[in-house]
Amino acid sequence: MLDLAEGHVAALEHLHDRPGCHAVNLGTGQGHSVLEVIDAASRAVGTAIPYRVGPRRDGDVAVSYADPSRARDWWSWKATRTLDEMCADSWRWQSANPQGYTST
Image (cartoon, rainbow, N blue to C red; front, side, top):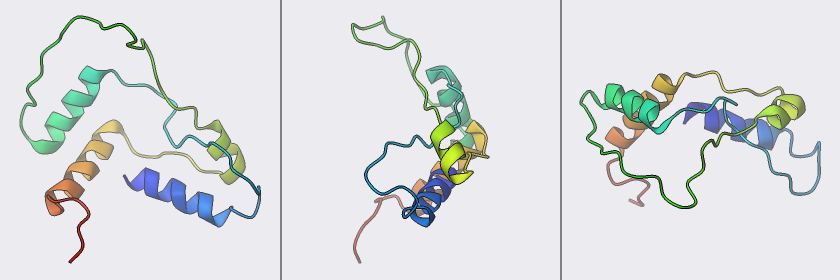
């Protein structure tokens, strides 16, 4: 979440550079398998996350990841955290905000 927040700040800081609407990916440029994400999330929460492997479904994509080159080229931004750090940060936020964003 921290990399994502920093990417949004970079976009706001450079908003005047390119007027209009542009798609910019804020990823690492490296894909991770579902099992890698489950393993990293399990480490973050401190317990195994149960899952089951089912058959491939029509429409399932083999590979999907974000190409962050536009963010790098336009704003000199790049993700700096590992998958483990990303999962730990997400879990920290969720643990501190179990109801998500709520009005008080």
